[in-house]
Length: 110
Image 1 (tube, rainbow, N blue to C red):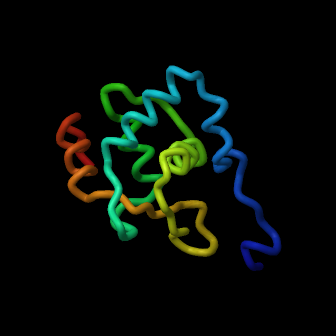
Image 2: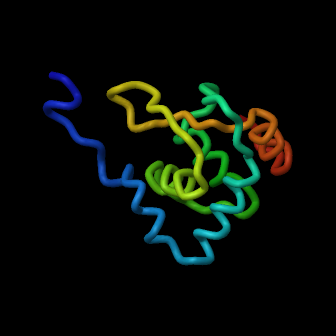
């Protein structure tokens, strides 16, 4: 069975879920995502799913879905590439330095 023929992404992967956050939570998430920083190339070391977990563990973090995270990144103008045709996860044009900064800032262990 192929993914596209017989399965759909679950509801927690809808980028429009970002709009369901309160304005305060939207701003917290956008500010955090903006700290990562953009590059000209797609970084394939971190997926949307992994980044959402880093956010959730941050000092200002809270639970969000993968789709909510992707919606925030799109709103900020990050470019993306799907990890694999059957995966809901994305890679973004993010700075590796930015990810390391956020990990160190919050002393998050991976």
